[in-house]
Image (tube, rainbow, N blue to C red; front, side, top):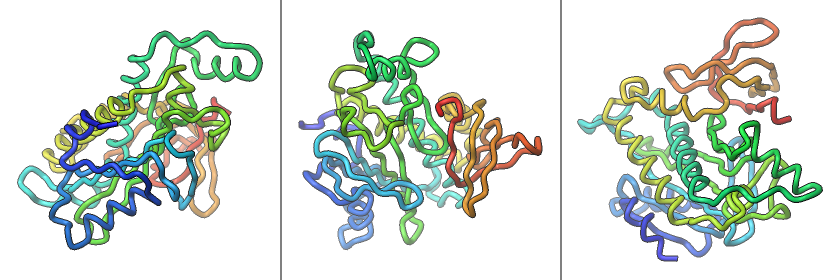
Length: 292
């Protein structure tokens, strides 16, 4: 594949035949002797990542050729070249998640009508994917997963460069995994969701152009999510809002409540069921209880 559309969307685009971790590869490139040749908006991509990782140090392995590992370099500076304040960095994973959600939605729209459910186990999975509306739905699960009708199709991991001069945004997108390849029972792929092989270049280009466009507006506002419209856009895509959720915090603390809104820093504000008090969650595992 030539990746024509994706190359046009990025400042620099490199496709690797194999990689341990595209985040690691990009971080080494942008902090090494040739760092100046890797501008804001540079991208590394592979469909054969052997040492992928997610939040909380989780690792996974995906069969070659069936997923995309994507790492994008962002330089968080405002329109006048001043660095964005550290508190503005909390929105970056959400911007990436919103961009991927929109890209997945467009791929779902490109697919023909969802194939009729079969019989047995596949039929129940098909019905679950269609969801309560009777059609496929893509949504952002706070803070950095993209779901298709409750099943995870993409995870995102953002990592700050050692000198805080940039952020490497990694995304792992399930393209053509079948039911035997899935890492968990709550995962899916674009192939399983739509019944057709996805246009990988179109999805990737949509993601890159959307993320860079949103980030440009966000950075131009000095990292003001409200003024840039980013807060409203992310909230409109975030399927976690309004859900009953279980929150698992560092230190083994857990509680159940309703996810009400995002605060000014992108944290999830949850009203705890037991105390009826709200708590802003910056880091933790969130489970949507209606999918359990």
